[in-house]
Image 1 (tube, rainbow, N blue to C red):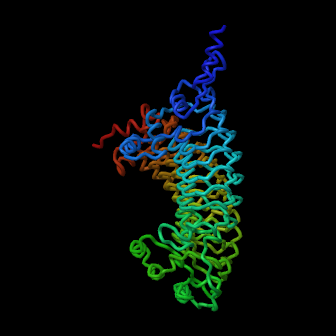
Image 2: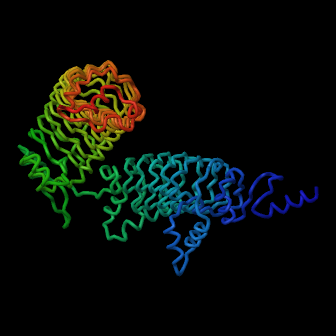
Image 3: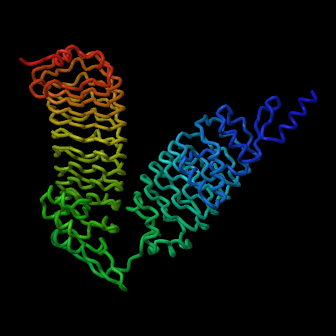
Length: 621
């Protein structure tokens, strides 16, 4: 008994408390803790971390190149020494369960704790971080992490630079954090794809630098007007020599915020003493191309100073082509030439455009094409006369404003309307598109769009090619659409990764082209056996990479199909009986020859239907 008591007493002085006492490990310093977490057999909830003050780089995945580079340094900083220590015990993949029970009440340094750890995604909200001063790069490139942290007491933190940089999935509320002592916010949310949470309650009174805080934050679009930033010296004496307003703007470089900067990042403009009333598009372009000078500074003519009531044509007005030569060759339109030769395409300030009188405008095609700065409310516009909105917001990557109040009864042309409008996700269910004949590419690669548009009158539509191609978020009902006149459904849902809605009520009797229709639609698995496909001649790649699709298609009349290459390639769940298909193998042989791939990567590859065996075995006399 005395021996047992002695061993327990001895263990409490060292790193390991003998399992016969409490079955707990008690590391007394960073290296002892590091050894324990590198042992996959040691469960994290068996480690008492109450004595630990430094957890920097504990679960960081450091590359051999980083370790080698530090070893070659002549003079080592404290961080370098820490890196060398971590490199001495190479990272191992492990189970993180139980980490939420850790006692972190004495920890002061969490710098790079999960740096580049691409498997970590455990809850940490119960951690006591009240003494932590440094969170530099804590979750940097922790690509899976997306857990609540809103209960953290961050009152002592001084450094949050790079904290979530590259944490692509992180999107949790942080507005309750106390950041009043934080000095460095540089790159904090840079390269985050999902993060879009309010931060308007943050007190930045101690902030010294916000460099690139939201640069390439692909989803971030919040109101930060309340932030007090005048005291931040880096805006006035920045290392690049930018003026203070541009230095503030680059905080949001390549994020949706560049199209809707907070008030403190906008340069104030002097009053403009004139009002213009152009009589046609040419005069409007001339006015928009002008600059006015005040005290040696040049400013754009305010949009609020332009009366547009006489204008009927606003096409190409703010379009920003990345390759003018290509577009001029493609479009052969003098208005596109004017745009390419003008500085209008670089406009940043759209304040006042909401006041424009558009009641006589007929043509708005390409109006905001590629205008990545544009994200201004134009809901109040009267577009009742507009017939052409082709590519109006195509490539306007940051545009996300309400448009549902628009009266669109005159609209006839809307192809490519929101293509590549990556942020756009607003209701459009009240739109009247009864005159529209083509919906080609309307929402292609509008990655955020997910609104119910089942109320649309599609009775005149004949072309739905690429309609939702690459619309990764879209998953809304469409079963009530009238598609009886549609001829082309090529790639309609291609790479629409979320789409999985019933379509069995569709009248597809007029459709001729269904090639790539569900190619890459990895969630789609709905019954289609009632479809009338007797007029379809092209089904190439129709279900290619539709990895969940496994529905009966035995009732389909495919007698007119000429093209079937790649139809079920990599449709990894499809194993339906297609022996009943009345394929005209001579049609296929005449147009395509013997198809190389139809079922490769699907369960039917090893046991294809009889008609396919006959087709592959055919040789014309």
